[in-house]
Image (tube, rainbow over all chains, first blue to last red; front, side):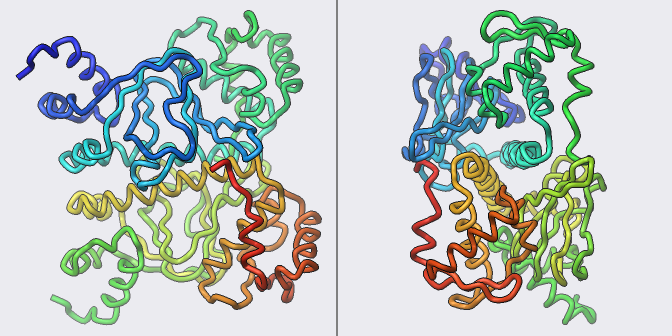
Amino acid sequence: MHLGCDHLCDFQDACIRKVPIFSDLSKEEVHRFQEAVHSKIFAKGQFIFRQGEKSKGLFVLSDGLVKLTILSTDGKEQILRILYPGDFFGQYALLENKTYYANAEALRQTTVCMISKEEFLKIIGHSPKTMFQFLLSVNQKLHESEEWIGARSFLEVEQRLTRYLLYFYQKNNHPGQAFNLPIPKKDFAALIGTTPETLSRKLVGLKKRNIISLEGPRGIKIIDETALQAMVGDIGR
Amino acid sequence: MHLGCDHLCDFQDACIRKVPIFSDLSKEEVHRFQEAVHSKIFAKGQFIFRQGEKSKGLFVLSDGLVKLTILSTDGKEQILRILYPGDFFGQYALLENKTYYANAEALRQTTVCMISKEEFLKIIGHSPKTMFQFLLSVNQKLHESEEWIGARSFLEVEQRLTRYLLYFYQKNNHPGQAFNLPIPKKDFAALIGTTPETLSRKLVGLKKRNIISLEGPRGIKIIDETALQAMVGDIGR
């Protein structure tokens, strides 16, 4: 029974299909759950949720860019993670029945799919394979966080910078082309634990060595990926 | 069929029962899986596993104390986590089929229960409730890691110190009594991102304000828990 939802259903189907954790769902399961998925467009600067709000469900980034941040009591912001299409977020508050511990803010026009808590629990309750995929993803995020704690302790600014440049480059999905930093340089500096001045100096240094070129205020083109890869540093592996 | 394994089975049963993620297993399920659990005692300073080794399974700390650390290429150590009885570890390498990204070292004589990958996957495959408990635990660890990334950025040394003192105190399980820091002061200083000198000064400061007393080289007694609680700082909640 698809009464007049053809376009919408296709859209929601795409939203579910885009997310690696749901890739094991059968076509029937996708159909069964697609009505539970609501998509919403957020303008640049809009909050999808804020610290302290009650959980609304699981969010999946379909298109656009989102930053997850926490604020200190005096209003300073720390970026925890930049989210790209296919990433999910909001799972902590959902699974723990708690309020959000971070803010999710759209960095440009962004489409997000939302699955209510009840529906999400139904999905993973019906599909152990999906629950396992979800477990793998949370496990992967935990690893990234712990590795980052190590990187902040051990690696030099330049190594942390090159790690992120390669990450943004890879997520940008247009090999060989210039990409824009997803966040302003001052936020990028805070993310990698340095000052804006040091960041600028390091970027100019990479440019002088012909490893990157700088294109406009936020544009970066990677010229020598191999050289960059050789600079990311090792955390004792 | 319990041919002569009475004492051993009881012991392994206790090992499984101790772990919150397995608390939902029925008595039958515990019996079914207890033969898959191998326990092993490690002396202080012994490694349960090392960075780069192949996964041996899931480890559950039954008794003792373990530190998870990563090493920089020049041999500097960063503690990621102190593990207490009931904590599990090694799940990243197990679920991702990768080598360990951290070292697990016994901080004193420690009993560890090990479940092979095959058996662990069988357990969570048979019991969606257990898989869900496991998902909740990994999700909780992710939250702690991200909160710590925020704490390292926002909080003052004293706030990070009081957070850990309260954590050790709570894990020590003897309300009102003195406890020993689980790690030497220089490691504790690195864990909270400060120097040993600053750590000592802060501890003496807390002592002068009659909030703690210092008992021997590593002993600490919390005198005014309320005052300590008021000092942990807020990450913008």
